Length: 135
Image (cartoon, rainbow, N blue to C red; front, side):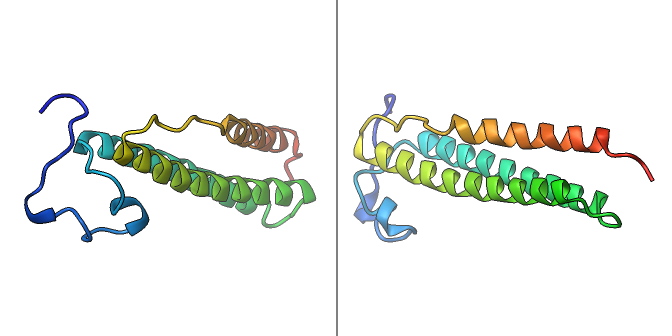
């Protein structure tokens, strides 16, 4: 099999057996290496979301006895960014898988702003933790 060849299946075995049908019932089956790489990228987005949620829980727990308005905003901001990362990961997986199946160019990456917001929130959390008086 040459680079970017399609997988040939007997009796249409690949059709109708997977979900979401909006992705898998379109186009032709790409080389599994491309689909698996796309899946790994999605899992990276999911790991980012889980990490951001863990950071939000950590900040919330650190200020449990003495809640501070800034800590609550920071924790909620991290939750919002985590939800955005999860949604963006699904959207990018869907678009890339469709592009692979339809033999179209892969979609561009238009979300560096999400990474910048996440980094700013985490940096803000570090500043809050460092500047908060111990008591």
